[in-house]
Image 1 (tube, rainbow, N blue to C red):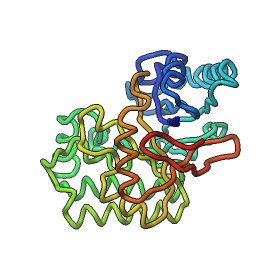
Image 2 (image 1 turned 45 degrees about the horizontal axis):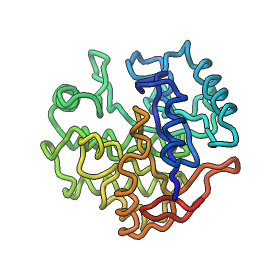
Image 3 (image 1 turned 45 degrees about the vertical axis):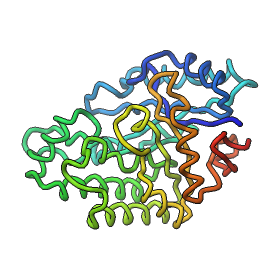
Length: 285
């Protein structure tokens, strides 16, 4: 049975290769529905997003690829869009032309004096520095800011898909907090309530596992259990940065989802997002 994947980065942002190589790899792996979601351009100077002057080129390149592979694989044009108040959000009008978007929080609050932001998924050193210098070493304040920004994004600029919602755990490695702590779980549950009310999808993102950064996908099993209880629709993505990663850890993740009780994954079609039955072998198209 085949898979789908809507979260990959090519050489327009921090991916490794030209877009066509990702499509060829997807075809080899039996993928039946596919989308590009490079990091959206923004005014903040970061090394991993599309440069603003190349945004039109990105859109045209993916449109050309979609036409080239028409009849072999549906290719959708998307972006992974950061939410940084006053800087960027999924609600920016220039992003309205996309087939879909993924809304993600990669930064916490801004340093009050020096202008840099707490970086959630950069280096462990940058993660620790932000906790110390922006939040005074208070991990609860830091993590609260992360989930507060997610909730704010969902409420004021809702994306179609919420990306790697608990990525704040990646550089933690149980050093600063435990996912079992009541305050942490309450932040997660509050965020899920906001997502459920907005009617958006939540992605199951396998990158942390196959890159050996986390034990479980984003989000963790206890979060998935609550997602199931709230009937929030889900989509399985690998967050690929290299063509070989397109279906990374999908079989294992799908098996875990089935054990929790999920019976459907969402795929993107010309008529929008639609649920489909799945097993650990793939999605029933």
